[in-house]
Length: 275
Image 1 (cartoon, rainbow, N blue to C red):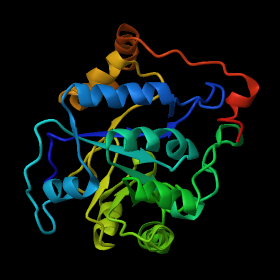
Image 2 (image 1 turned 120 degrees about the horizontal axis):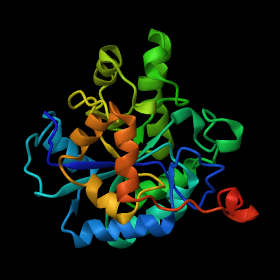
Image 3 (image 1 turned 90 degrees about the vertical axis):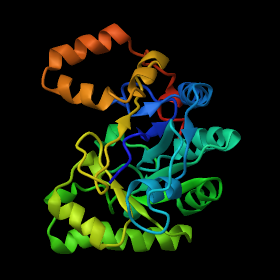
Image 4 (image 1 turned 180 degrees about the horizontal axis):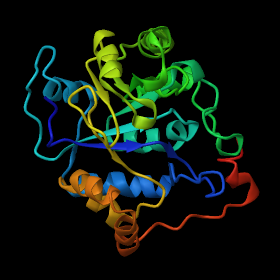
């Protein structure tokens, strides 16, 4: 069984990206990210690495059931954006904070092609992935090209689960132990495929279903430190599910907590660091 005491945070990009190029608020600014990591440490949260999480949380492998710190937190990043390597990785390394980076194996060195052209951003290449892995980021699988796994036939599902793992291990030269579902979507067939492929655990987003679909808390561009602190509360996932049924209530709660302002960046910055 997964361990509910662990706060699992989900980031996407860390960079300065204009709202026009990031309409879904996936990119946290480097300053906000540093503030969030500093808050975690100052508030007594204990960042753990992937191996520690899997040993304690999945009930599989040697050391299953290993006790965790009371305020354990696991940081995860989806997609492998270049800005995570440029901005997030140095902050994490400076504080000695481990994390897990989930990468679409077929898009290494490419861009987020699953998004409309205006909203695409560059992804890390092989050398960049090896560099962040050496600095403390575990590398996990995130499909092959970010397709929704629930829509795939058996052969394509194998490619996005088993072949993706083989390819990532070839790229980074390290074991790939866990999986994050693109878009957070999964069903019993998809979860079974991930388990059968030999992964030790998998992550969803809001639709949790055991150790092969562990829920995570999303951190996004509109989060203030106040909303970030609220998201760390152990009852937040339950509250979020409740407000999903009442969109107006959810919007009112966001307005009450406050939203981080989205910058209108100058032309070079608006492209994501001019890349």
